[in-house]
Length: 210
Image (tube, rainbow, N blue to C red):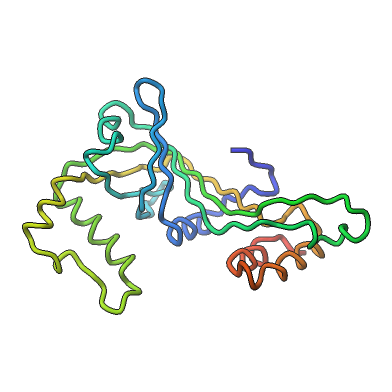
């Protein structure tokens, strides 16, 4: 990833927060023949002492990734948060010299790790139960696995397998106009308040105001 110093973000708490708020990950692996296999998977994060932590989820046994995991253990995972188009009309210089161009703001976390599949029914049920509780929490009547017939759940479990990723490295790219002046940043955040409140808040939070 191209990562200019002013966009680099390595505060672990902020990286973990992004992962937990935006858990749908882009998971990239290389097959034995050198081709790439790319999947989009919701993952849960767990901190572990002495490291970056682990990611857990599940995949279908019909997914090509299932066979790749017999051969390869390396994985690249991308989590993406809010993003926004930035118009040069919002820069102070637009009115003075017009030497400005559009850009795009975004926040991402890139993870490298070792991945394995676990053919363990109890482990798989635990992953599914936690993911379900997490994402059903805001529902008026949260769905739980026990709501479905036991034979139906058993049938579905036969089609999937748990995965676990031991995180080896984690880095963030928080591109929130750090290469612009404070005046430009104030203007950009104000312009985004109605159309993209999340990015407006991230700019205010992560831009290094003096």
